[in-house]
Amino acid sequence: MKKAFVFPGQGAQFVGMGKDLYDNNQMAHDLFEKANEILGFRITDLMFEGTEEDLRQTKVTQPAIFLHSVILAKTLGEEFKPDMVAGHSLGEFSALAANGTIQYEDGLRLVAARANAMQAACEENPGTMAAVLGLDNEVIESVCASIKDEIVIAANYNCNGQVVVSGSLKGVEKACELLKEAGAKRALPLQVGGAFHSPLMEPARVKLAEAIQNTKFNQGICPIYQNVTGQAVTSPDIIKANLISQLTSPVRWTQTMGNMIANGLTEVIEVGPGTVLQGLFKKAGAELQLSSANIDN
Image (cartoon, rainbow, N blue to C red; front, side):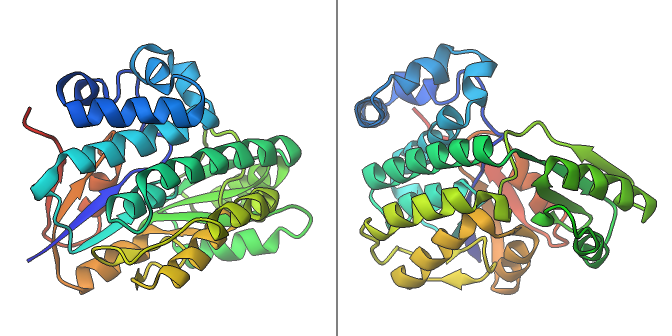
């Protein structure tokens, strides 16, 4: 019987997220107020009462999801007893703060730096992403590799038959056409600000690498399955190196789920907004107990 706590990434945000925690739990209230101080703006106002447009800005979205997830994990108290953790993209930072590898304040500063660096990289190298449904990974990889004059790669392996490609605007457009010809059920452009998890994020990777290097990483309370390899890691130095590679590397979520299941996973608790990750675990081909974390006030 092994329990995983998993943490969502960008896209799960919604107006009102975290408000019940802020209103009903003193520790949560104090942690949110601390975040407002650290960030230098009242992110809670945007989370609780902002517009969807406000929440879609990368510099708001990423800290908002991190805060909702990590503060929720902290308020679980004794109930937060993971045998393993993982987070999808941005969620990896939430997982590391929740399992004690990094301090809450340091995690928030890293996420804010990540968001700003990604925003700048998107402006410098415009790109996009598209979801590809119903094709084998190998076919998608070979189609992307066949496009020589533009950048496009398989960037998120979400579950079998669901992969996101990422790259330059023309690269992704060309890939979508070729992937449909190759038999994809659908190739849908996503409403995202840039080519995340692709080589176009290199300027952001360089900026964030320095911030990660200067942050103290501790031994966490359990292994984290990291995006870059999909494998369980406990060494703070290896975690750091993988986290630096994360922005320009694919998110290997399919592999992460498979490895967790192979290591005895029986229960998955999603911590933070939405139920996207539970949906992916449902497709992972194992009998798992799935739920969302919540606190009894």
